[in-house]
Amino acid sequence: MERTRRAISGERLFAILGCSVAALGVLAALVELSSFAFLYAYARLHRDPFPPQKSPAYNSEEWGRAFWTEHTSFGSRARSNYLPFTVWGAKKWHGKYINTDDTEMGTWRRTIPAIHEGCRKTGVRRLWVFGGSTVYGIGTPDWATIPSYLSRELNTDPSACLDVTNLGAEGYVTNQEAILLIQQLKAGRRPDIAVFYDGINDSLVGAFSPGIPTAHWDFETIKAKFESPVASKLACLNLLYSSQLVKLLMEIYGPEVHRKISDEELAVRAQATVQNYEANLKLVQILASQYGFKAYFFWQPVLAYGDKPLVPFERNLRDASSQELGGHVHRGLTAVYADAESRSAASGSFVFLSHIFDKVQEPIYVDEFHLDSRGNEIVAHAIAQTVWPGSFASTGGKSK
Image 1 (cartoon, rainbow, N blue to C red):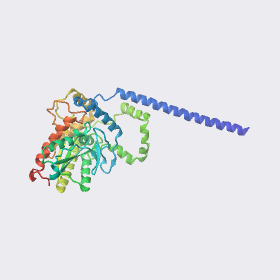
Image 2: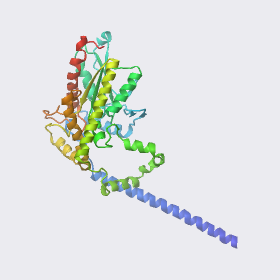
Image 3: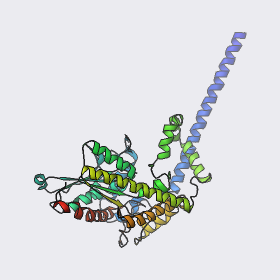
Image 4: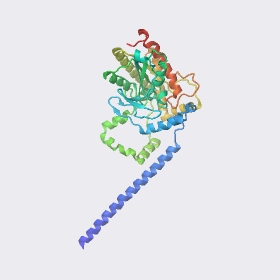
């Protein structure tokens, strides 16, 4: 009898435990479903009012709709590989409008060549373009990136014979680009001309997040994964909708994530950012002298700085972005740009292009940083006007 009573008690205990586990499972499922529903509704109610694909810059482009359909898939599916020292590279992708090709130099965005047939006899010169997503060409097809336009512009001169390579990667700062250049030189490759097109990423990283001029994007996240391996193993919890909901609520109702930076501290960050940029320029110039190539540097335009006549989309976009995160991003960006403009005028070591659109009436920007095809064409023309007249003048049109 006692043995039977114990058996019944054991069965009851397991039944209770089973029901409890099942109840917890149902509760967890309900929490996940509720969190998903809330996040979905929140996303629907708080959509970006100025998505790039709605820019009037695409109104006259027959390829606009199809391009953004592919671009959406590119952004959600393509992944960038980890790379030594530069941390990441260009995303791997092949489509109708966006292509990154495997080359001896790595995986990079395709540039549409414009070299003349006669160059096979005279020889081809190499021009490498370094930069972030604006060089990579976010928002435009392969044929409408700055490097592709630059190839077309420069090779209108049949004697140019310039093979242009797009070495832009999303988020790159000049520290990463200098390392990339060193890696290519160490591998025995060198350009005849190197063009660096930067400003936005250096400004945001140096003055806003993480506020360290020598850092790179996602510095805190990568740092935490390295220094806290246990926490990184629990990163899968971030995939839970309930976890995402908690983070969202903390952002909305919690203390301000980004503390207000004083004007004095912002000025110090801005100066340090441009000093780091200029230090990279000097390093590249030393390499150029040693390896026998020309180097040119351009500070890129941005919607938040300059006097471009804005169409309503651009004006609304600028006003919205100036309020983002309490205005911290806008303040940091403009502080660095003001210092860069002053230093460019004083030193002449780099070309400040932030006023290049001051007389352009038509829409150019598709978001705060990226340009449409017409904007890229204007930038490429300005770069070509600087690069080509002086590149080979002393050698009668021949590179060293």
